[in-house]
Image (cartoon, rainbow, N blue to C red; front, side, top):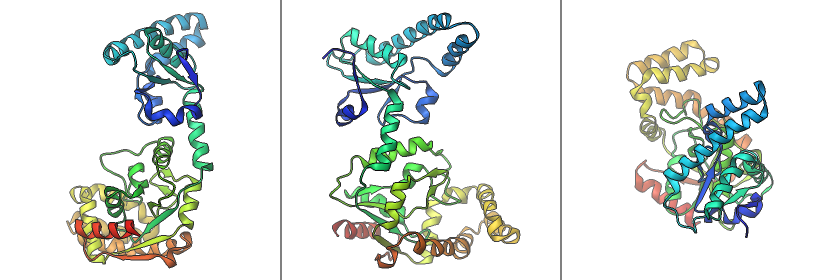
Length: 351
């Protein structure tokens, strides 16, 4: 084969894991928005450099812009080779892509191939990859799902984590979305990914599932924080068999106190989030919850939130949205210890 080879994504997908390196030649901001799983970012033009060259195209002319752009591209590719790839053997096989599979990835792939590496360039670039992901999430047959249902604090996310640890197939949408799925669900140290990156993470998980085995997933709403669950997946979840996870309210309070410790440490942050519930519960109720948070009465506040907000909301939505919940297998947890979740996970995984 003559290198650099130009191949489309459909032909590359079966061998995607066999490349020694997947190189995203786009700028830092493009990479941060979304990228092929496992790719590393090696911009041939940084964000400021793209602005500089683009401005020259508009204000001077294409020829002058291309001269400056070519010098920058050559300098950046040289730096990547010197700092990342000088120790790579002749058999090292990289896949290179940019936005449309044009000049940026073409320049890098050509130089790598001239060195002697069997470089492959993605035809159509990231746009072709993104089109494949969008189509796959819409059209690819989904595996059988088992939906873990249960009121807030019943341990659904913990159960998914334990199921994953014992070899079950798990699609943890809250983990992928970096959000716990409620008005208080923001993670303090982690921003949510972009919508496109969220869909990439879902696609990456799902393409590796064994279609002969069920996939465990939590009974999410259509949005996890600011991110939208793909429609085909949401529809499949709502029609799938359910598991009803049961835990007493005192134990749910204990579990939530453990999982939301950052609010205990920062009542002001919690109070800011509680303000989002003003329209539902009124100013007087929110003020009383503020007082509990500020006064260090977190267990009392959590219990009130469950009774007044989360449990009624769950009961209003679960029967309407998950049509098989009435026939759900019931799993009763007596406590929130590791052994309790492990026993429940083994029971479900063996079924």
